[in-house]
Image (tube, rainbow, N blue to C red; front, side):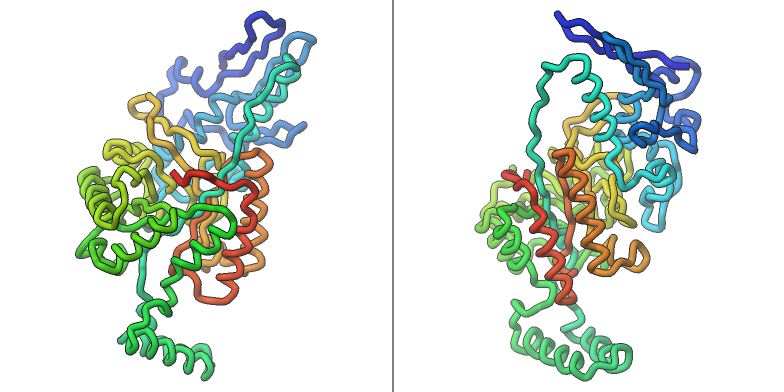
Amino acid sequence: MSGSIKVSMEGRAGELEINDVFFFQFENKVRWLSQESLPLLPLKILERRNIPILYGNDKIDESRESFHIGIDLFGSCFFMLSRYEELVVNEKDTHGRFPARASVAYKGGFLDRPIVDEYIEVLWFYMKKLWPSLERKALKPNYFVSCDVDFIQDRGVRFPGIINRLGGDLIKRKSFKQFLGSLKLFYTVSILKNKTQDPFNTFNFMMDVCESNNLKMAFYFIPRNNKLPIDGDYDIESDEILELMRNIIARGHEVGYHASYYSYSDLEVTRKEVALLRKVFKKAGGNPEDIKGGRQHYLRWETGITEKNWETVGLEYDSTLGFAETVGFRCGTGQEYNFYDSHERKPMKLRIRPLLAMEVSVFNLNYMGLSHEEAFLIIEKTKNTTEKYRHDFSLLWHNSSFNLKKDFELYQKLLFLKGAPNIDAS
């Protein structure tokens, strides 16, 4: 059973009728946030556009002054943007994250497509057909580049980590040349105390590349002291971090919040961490109010909890919502949008900045395990897709992920795909 939503324009002939299945089902004994409210698999397909149908059917009836669209465009978009399924499906990975394989997008074969944007194009097509004089607001897409600062020191060029590195050079990699290179690096960084040569000290390089492409970068810091090993290797109040923040501020880039591993479901921890970050940022010469958003460590996110914590502590945006395992559209779009509280059934102030690509996803052998060439092609394809719809693109690259010459080259190539620059990183 279904209802319908009718769209008309005052003073103009014509009517657009859109199927209402998702919300209508709750008027017929289907419970909100129940398994039976999820899309039925396998999904139907709108053949003329090859679009998966989450709710509704593939019928489109046209007459001279009215159209009926069988797809539930509004309900389907809500389903994706609100992450409704994550409140229903209980499957988690080893880090307590909702995995890509559990999503309807993965099961329906459209994780690589911005399905929400495709639905909007269907809506616009028929609105424009009914009312040709309609004009659409031009969107200016942003290229958001961010770095999660997990580690600032490469333990492999310090004692005792250097022992494992040297052993690996000789035994695993069988390269005396790499052995000598590692030994030289150890001497430079650990003995001469030249931290600029630390392989993890890539901050200036990352900002240089951004600036050459007229982009601003966001660096997200874990604001913890006495950290657990999983939360990085630095004290947020150390002179080294203060110096780094001053450099970022002076160059006009953004400092943001990288919430610690266990914070994602804990409001008080989130509150204390954000307060500490703002305190340190102020000490570094920044305005605490400029701490506007960030991302959860390990992309740990509990829909129904995490977003409320972020909004409660006064953060404006979050960029956690991507899948660690793969590049793609977890939210069905790359465009930033306001989230929805599906428990309280009300819109939120917090904006979601969907994460579409991360270097760990493409290189990690437990995830996609791609070569640099393959990684470039799939990220380029995703970036081109967002450009087609004039929507945002968000890339995450860790400062500690420049191990090979090809890493530096790929980062530069990806930022050259900027399309349209973002003016304000917040």
